[in-house]
Image (cartoon, rainbow over the protein chains, first blue to last red):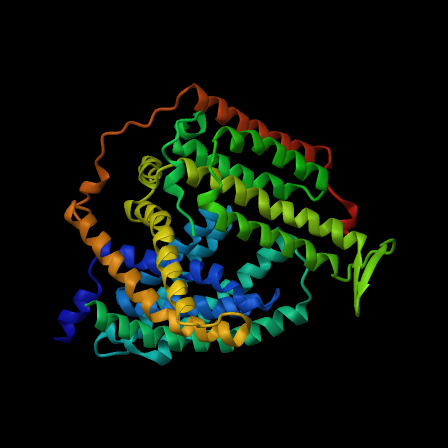
Length: 188
Length: 268
């Protein structure tokens, strides 16, 4: 049974999976716009963004449950950013590198389970992957903010926002896992 | 929140441009403004894009939400640097709010940042308001982009308004039931209540769309076959020349003559 499930987990993406990834990519941008970071000011709005990012990333992976779901999800939200706000093309570097690293780590971690697919059911692992994903996202974004967009930000504030962001990531990933599992039951 | 489709039907020369040329146009306008830190140069960049925006006859009402978001982001981009403590000897303090001092250097930097953020955002709207996502995806595949990635791009543009609509419905339902969203605590509560219905409804829509696409042979790569031919016409070549000239001019001015740089911003 485990072998069959492992084979299923490795099967190719179909249109439903891709659209599901797109939905989560759209969701993260919609949540970003609608809740306007709960009225939190820069740079702490990025801490709150970490929560939305972790929530949608984990929920997407938990629903799709296939390797490279996180990669397609990232392509989706970077595409939305690019087309809707003219995001700098350097973001595509992030869109390829960050999720690839996380996906490879997920694959490696999956080997420690009897069924590699079980990695998508492990809340602890998903929180860890969301943290890695968000850490790469956060520091890449701030590198862009400081070096490309020349927006000033004191280092102390950046580190403080990141520290709060870790707590937000854990919260978002936990909620994402919970809602992802619920969504699986309700939509399947 | 946003319905781009309202603007697709118009038949202006901007609508008729090849999607690949429009993509290049976005990339150029996302890049060149970042060469400059002098406000006047950024105004020129905006002025160059303005006639194209006007020619496209874009109805701003369906994209009001996005325009407001760009405006808010630009205002924040002005406010934050205005009060930032730039280490510049000749700065003039304009006014104070408690311990925060607004300086002329900060304000000029803020204006510059707002323009650098707003120009690409507004230019990108030209593409999404004048190009059907399906045509964009086909043009991308013509550029040898993998089918799944092109599909993701198209899906992103199609699903964003759908998810926005679902979110709008959820928010309306929350309003009717008296759920408050002002302030951090209320916003968090509203977010928690919105998450499950938002996700379930969005996923249901995605399943229907995904199955429809699959039934048209997406998995068998049938989606890759289409009749439209993508040929560049006179206006496409004119636009290509304009883009190339804009990039070359930007590079020459900035790196050849060292123009367009605000020394106050660079010393910050």
